[in-house]
Amino acid sequence: MIARLHDMIGPLLRRSRRRWGLAASLAGAGTLLAACHLLDVSNPDIVPPGGLNNAAALPTIRAGAIGDLHIAYTGSGAQGSGGTTEGVILLGGMLADELINTETFPDRILADARQPQRESVTLTNVFRNVHRARRSAEAAAGKFRQYSPDTTLDAGLAEVLNLAGYAYVFLAENYCSGVPVSTVNADGTFSYGDPLTTAQVLDTALNRFRQALAAAFALDTVKALATGGMSLLASIRASRASMINLARVGTGRVLVDAGNLAAADTAVTAVATSFAYLIQHDLNTTRQNNGVFNGIRKFKRYGVPDVEGRVGLAWRTVADVRTPSFRTPATNLGFDGATPQYDQNRYVDEKAATPLASGLEARLINAEAALLRKDTTTYLTTLNALRATPPSYVLSGTAALTAITPVLTSPADSNAAVTQLFTERGRWLWLTGHRLGDLRRLERQYARPDGLVFPNGGYFKSGLQYGSATSYPIPLDEENNPKAATCLSTAP
Image 1 (cartoon, rainbow, N blue to C red):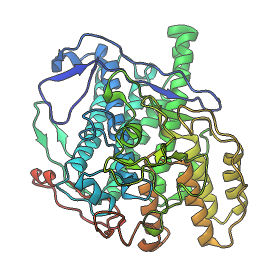
Image 2: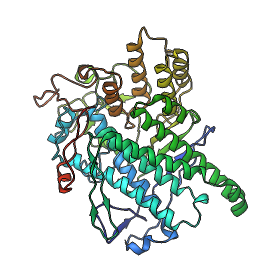
Image 3: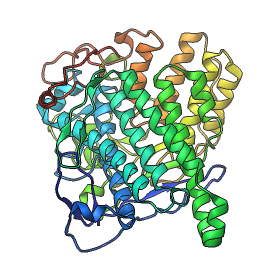
Image 4: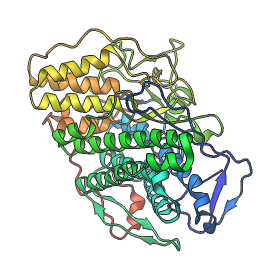
């Protein structure tokens, strides 16, 4: 049973039968840790707030933070095609060129056409879920600091701080500048927060990752051996390596978003390519399902496009084993009964794990930093090393990729090199929540014109034209916050 820490619920927290797991590879190791189911209790009940105020509740609190981050990131199978099905992977991919809408909901059609509406229920739900994940992780960190007998022998503090950092990353990469960050007080009342600029949101994410890194380095292997012998030593050693790498990749991602590639390069260099922090999914409840699989292959609300809006990546016609898609049968249609339905084959079922951070991402950051300092040798060597030995976690639930050909060669000029780099990022990081942030960076950091980055021109259905949005707006119901405003800026 997992008690989730809800933003909107004060006095009572409901538990249901859930199991959340995580798997992360060790630095320098090639195999993933087995999924660790944190709790598996079969009697649903109500947990009063006092039940969460002791050390015994910390595994429950930690598991709840993992679960909330999963919903914000990957979505789920809960509530059919509404409610919590969508996470930032689906919504970010739809506003970018990674996915298209293949169903009938007007608010999602408008979002796909780059005209997202503030009053959209779908968009509001995802925004709430990201904030719920943020609040859950930060509240969990407070509980660990207050009740843990010894945080040097418990990786929970480092993990929930890392999760908080990623929640802020989602806010910065997917939403316009001006996201309000409020808090819930112990008595259930709100302390309304001011709108934060994108730079401030990124700074907050960086702060969480730095706290996580400090907590991870504080994990004491010497004390673990003396206290619990070899078994505890192995556990702490594995957790320490995983949490350090998770914080380093998160730090690198924030610095990339902020345009500081040199610092990002330094932050991730020690991360082994074999590292991966995976959000685990299973069939225990629909809430635990992989929402990307469900949204595309089960509910057929989203599909894989090809050169969307004249400028999108050729996801289908350029065959690439990193971005597999199919249409079966050949007449398969989306939920709207009209749009050809091409399904993704990266996540092969509801149980497929979703990578949140990886050594692969670290190498892509190294490659981009090398390109910016005009070190084309290191740039190409780094990208081709990934192609020669693809990490085993790239396609969740399937056999590891074989070598990818052809070998990349030096582009004709810097413009072609940037296109090559972001194509590689698009393929490697497909359906992991990076694409929208990358397209925004192409405009913001590389001065690419919008007409060469985001889909534009005539939208493929409903008689619409593509709009100009490069991010999602602040939902209308945030106006309940007297300090909140509409976007401070809609610039990419």
